[in-house]
Amino acid sequence: MSKDEKTSQAQRYPCPECHTGNMTLQHVVYYTWVNGELITVPDFPAWVCDMCGMREYDQRALSWLNI
Image (cartoon, rainbow, N blue to C red; front, side):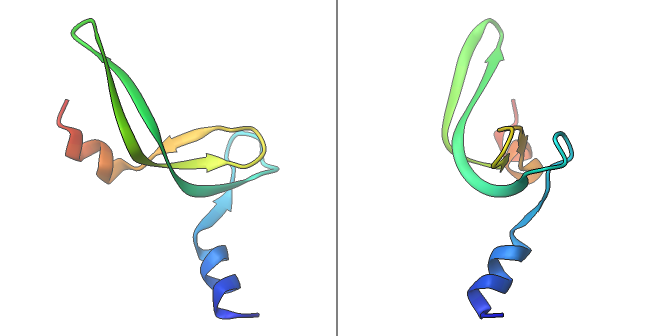
């Protein structure tokens, strides 16, 4: 197994929703409502399933938002 394959496997895990896909770290647009206003954050780190599309947002990045 090459170094790239080991790194790739370390950066993914099975999807807890569909149990079929793999969660990989990607940068997506994060949307949330704050006091009736839509807030968008580009290039936000999230774990995204390659099968069902489920998203889990990175907890450390969420704490940086302070909203």
